[in-house]
Image (cartoon, rainbow, N blue to C red; front, side, top):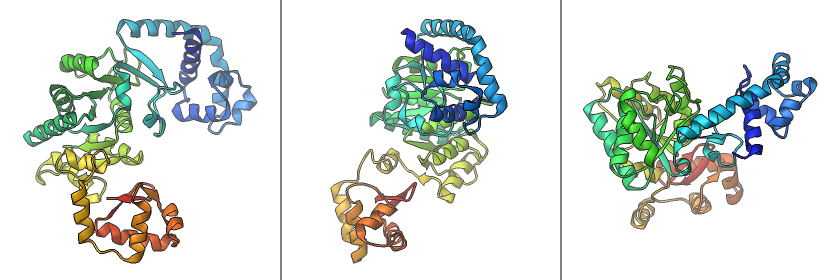
Length: 373
């Protein structure tokens, strides 16, 4: 690592180590100051001008400079340990930091990884679920992961027992790419029986964690890692989970991030289908029957021209609806832009778009963005 990069990493580690300074406050500070060095060299009064920085935090930031040599020594040891483990570290400030993660709430400041980091920017779908799947859940997870691999789409999961393990294993078996987001340090494999799977993923896929080497798999780490699973994925598929299962939290993270959520419907008498079924019932997740349903929704696969022609022949549109369809035919557009292009009020546009949704012609995306279904 070149010296300038090393120094920047030391400064970021120093700032991140301060109790009470998390990702959001670091982002607030960077909004006021040009870089981390300026933050650490700022005066007490300058720091107080930043929203969320209290007198106590301002004092802690200034005081942290007294231990800068210790941070430098610790980082040298950490980098040496990572290199020995054939792993690396990526920071929020690096140009190669995944763009999708930069836009989520509470993005990880550090990403430790082992494997092909370029895979993180590939088209990927998260598949998550219970640690105790039924036969139906196991078969479904295996099928979905295999079909994604066959279509050159990476699968993302959490290396946990059950659905996660099935997803990673099935993807590798089909010669596909898979990404595991773990809730411990890269050198602490959990569950321990997945050591062989861990090594296989690191060789042909990617293992990532926001936790430094040596971090134990504490219970609070796993809910946090779920936001990364959904954050690096185009969409999240829920296979089987109880209502209070961790997969439901991943689904909520995906919804909060404006990502698509999909669910496999299950037996209404099974507690492990309660999660997917309720997501579908609430309209929070799209019911899917196969991987093609996901890929069409994510626009990674389009309907055939014949299907589009049949749809247009079957649906009758009024003059205003045809005008709106023409406006969004080539690309999705936000309601205000549609209103401007069509010369209609926003309320009138919404009425016509609602009618078109019922006819199956258009689909509403997050942020009142509409596209041809």
